[in-house]
Amino acid sequence: MNLSFIGGGAMAEAMIRGVLSQSLAKPEDVYVGEISEERCRYLSDAYRIYASPRNEVAASKGELLVLAVKPQNFQDVAPELRNLLSPNQTVLSIIAGLSMSTLTGELDHAAAIRVMPNTPAQIGEGMTLWLCAPSVSEDTASQAEAILATLGDQIHVDRESYIDMATALSASGPAYVFLFIESLIDAGVHLGMPRPMASRLALQTVLGSARLVQETGTHPAELKNMVTSPGGTTAAALMALEEESFRATVMKAVVAAYRRSIELSEE
Ligand SMILES: NC(=O)c1ccc[n+]([C@@H]2O[C@H](COP(=O)([O-])OP(=O)(O)OC[C@H]3O[C@@H](n4cnc5c(N)ncnc54)[C@H](OP(=O)(O)O)[C@@H]3O)[C@@H](O)[C@H]2O)c1
Image (cartoon, rainbow, N blue to C red; front, side):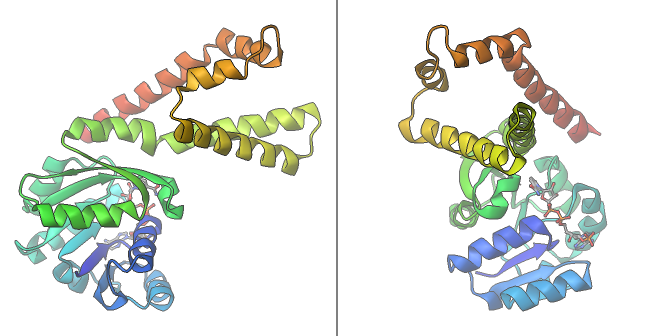
């Protein structure tokens, strides 16, 4: 299968790495259109793929054409792609906030897949939601699924509203988790712990706790209760968090991101 990318940045590279390492495409079947010549040189040297600062070859070669430019650059590439796309191609857009109707309308192309990945995709630990337009064939959807699975976990959804929800939860979510990790580290330093030690403790605590929830399938509230002894240290900490409305604050943050994603998609 020929696989093309318009935009050869961080997310495109994560997909290229995944696809090549799992032999889903051969290097000679991967084409990138990327505006930066330096970046093209890097991609063709590192992965032995075709990369050009002009988009024509990538746009016309890919049976699956991944749109991986920043949202503000979509309007630059759309008119060019509109003239180059043929009916046997499927466009797979990872552009945040770009709705299916804008994507298919601006490109005048019905076969499209809207994808919402997140940053950990760059190390194969991402969470990706994706939606197919009605005209995408089952074969193409299966190929897309195999490619997206190289980025980490993935869910094929049938309602676009889930993509907006995922924007607020899993796509913006890493920023909330980074903030939480940073807070734990700073707390350790505040108590007198060397920063590298506090960092190691905070990271392994977050990683191990997430894995425990995932591997046991136990509800997080139950796991929390198991580490909370009556009158103990964790109970004291949880009281402090409840006093500052920790859970309500996190929920409000996700709702704020969701509202903002709806606003942006309507602009
Ligand atoms: N990174 C994430 O975690 C994440 C998560 C969810 C969704 N996304 C979406 O994924 C998309 C790509 O993100 P990214 O982090 O990979 O961005 P990125 O690293 O900035 O990659 C975009 C690339 O496209 C190039 N480009 C700009 N205009 C172009 C044009 N007209 N033709 C061809 N290439 C062009 C850019 O070159 P210059 O830098 O020289 O402009 C850059 O190398 C975005 O739309 C973003 O919303 C990303």
